[in-house]
Image (tube, rainbow, N blue to C red; front, top):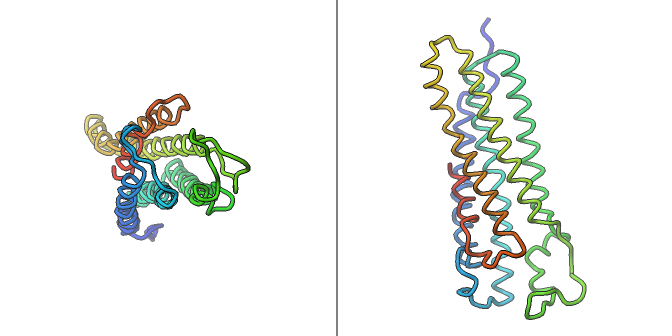
Length: 237
């Protein structure tokens, strides 16, 4: 008797549709973040923002962060569902897909929770502009009203893990294609087509480099950067 498929034949389509819907929402939020924070402008062109404006911008910023990693996870889950449909039942493929699915789900949950709870209390992420007092140089005066993790390190680590999972999800179809019964030239042609996702890996690496440069304490003009823009490129590729 023929084995029943392990996933719904349309699971990959449904998953990528959800990812696309979230990506549309993130595009709107990203636009609002750019407008509210003047992202991409030279520092000397940015006017002094009121406390209310800073609080509003921080709310859009946390919304953007919470959407980012789940979208990437859903796209990768869609690829896994598609690869299951190819019905390659070799143990190395089956266990690779299972292991990757567990890793992808675990990272999606962990990054979402860490993003949401990066500050204690959670509302301190946006309310710190209203609760804390700073001098003219931007230095904190007195005790902070809350605490936050090192967001820069968190972003760099999650970006690195994202690139790692991008690489892993591209290796699996390469193994699958190499096991097909066709001549070598056709295998290479198919592998090239299925490996276009390596472009996403390159974009992810560029994003890490730009964000690292932007976040250095001695960077003169941190807001004048493509780091924020290329994040949107990575999501939609």
